[in-house]
Image 1 (cartoon, one colour):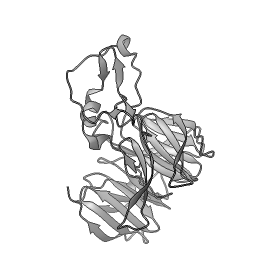
Image 2 (cartoon, rainbow, N blue to C red):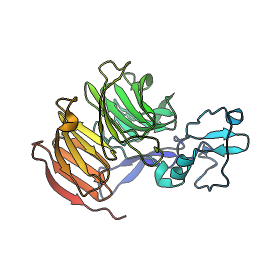
Image 3 (cartoon, rainbow, N blue to C red):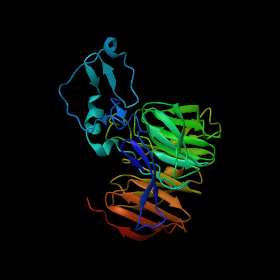
Image 4 (cartoon, rainbow, N blue to C red):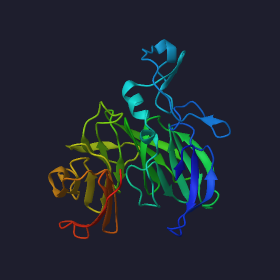
Length: 320
């Protein structure tokens, strides 16, 4: 788990007695602190307020985006107007929630593969050796792009969703990740999940993604060096998604949870096999015929052992 700038290892063997067993102090240096400082021995910025609106010219900052998404210029720090409003709340800049090996959600900023934990921090992918869970050790920081948001593992690759595209990173040598390629799209929030042949990406408007569209994109990744768009399908406001065999689950915000037959990606947008309306859906984890979904209305469990007859098993409401 993240604890602002720290990475914390927690023993959850007993669900009623969770306790800390290890900590990497100050490992998150960028996205939580607007690039100012993350010196664990000194201080971190925990809040700020807008003082004025400025027009920053290229001669002042060169328009070089920093890992935290803003710009330095001769009078201080500037953010794009839409990003500044979203970043003013602690919730907007906190990492998403990861889970165990191979069963993370599509909105996660952490993932585990080959005894390594991979973290997103601003423009960097951090590889952490967790062979000894109580003593995680940082292996390497690899610079990819400043706008990274989500991370999803598949075999020896990481698929990283960003506001302007999907990045593919090779982790066949987990202690030293290497960049492979980028599939670029219009500016939009961007979770991603994959199977052996395709990557499924949702693009949505809202938050810091005001210039985006609301789409599900299917991308051919058989050649990781040249990802290619196959089809795109309009959605309402898609968030997280997940795939198991030929069933794709998509959280479409206030339009609820949708399930599609993905056996033919060219027509899958016309093959919706289930639609649960009247709920807010944010992210899903499909695993062994059990779908876990989270949204503003709580946590839901569905049985999809028969994809044509998906059944709601339970619901837990969450206090706001």
